[in-house]
Image (cartoon, rainbow, N blue to C red):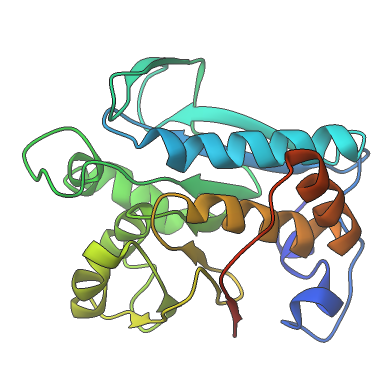
Length: 224
């Protein structure tokens, strides 16, 4: 399915466009890839893995989620030394989730190394996938020029940098600016992921996912 179809889906709940298109289904699943890299924060990527994986199961396969690397496939060492085997590289998809990690250590593993990779940033800028930043993953989107002049949010510790790089920083748990979605710090990945379920699969699917998770969303979803 083309990205533009998904961007128009669930228009009633999102209030973002005037034309409603069919939501994702088992026949035309939403393809979500979660970017992995050395220094990634565990909670940042585990939240979308859990939420979207569960939503996919509850909807009969309307969401397909996979972990992908920014470079070659292989093991990724996370912030707290968890090692995750990432089986494939980033490829065309509908949604690309960029988690954060390592933002306070400019010389260590984490988002700063991604931001220093100009080839990766050019590819990110040119991607047709819907970019979703969680925590300081938003700063990777910013480095690629995707947040300049746009409504966005990130971890509290990086908001000043995000604003300095030209974004209109919104103090909300989730900021949906249409073809750009960003979330606040660390645990906000839960709210971002549940919002993705609601926007593309509907409020009923999001509620079912919350019930099984035994988790109640908090904070604000700011919508353009």
